[in-house]
Image 1: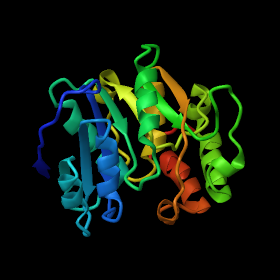
Image 2: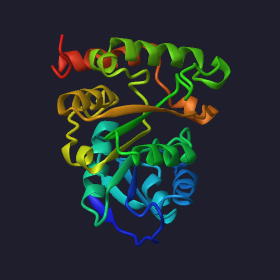
Image 3: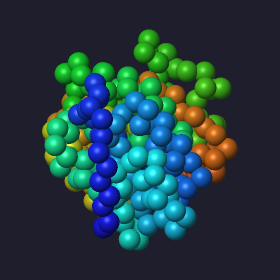
Length: 245
């Protein structure tokens, strides 16, 4: 692993660290990091074995940089990023943020404020609910096939149903140091999302959802997964014994 450390400026979010796992995201990572750093000083990008200069671009944009020498998958990149961030002086709040430009910084800020209420240990974004409990119109939600994948994944997640989660595969999460210290993701690929939910249940972390909007650009949609892969995420959890039958 190669580490590059940058200084930061004190702000109202001085204890917040944003973790961005990235693999071959050179086309957008500079803009994503700059956008996040317009609000949050502390950003760590985990370059997960990229071969397109992703890490160098993220570093120039102001991120702390951690490199995996080979591609290990998003779960491993998140775990590495959290381990790096939780060692930093004053780190109290942590957020996972996708590298492809589909998350909004203002949603992270809202989730940080929500966590500050003190009645939850982790706040997870949801694309399928509003603050008043209604569902957003389809035009503002995921594309049809993506919506099918996500709803199927949530329905097949026993712990997700138990915890009342509507969007178990949402990559936008904000959590406190108790969660960060106890986080131990072992599933390296996309199935880490189900393991994250399992860890919430096993550790009795208090979880709530916060409505968020995901920006489905042509670029982010090109990085998406077909329905079969989404279902495979669930079955991978069964095969590894991490999700009870």
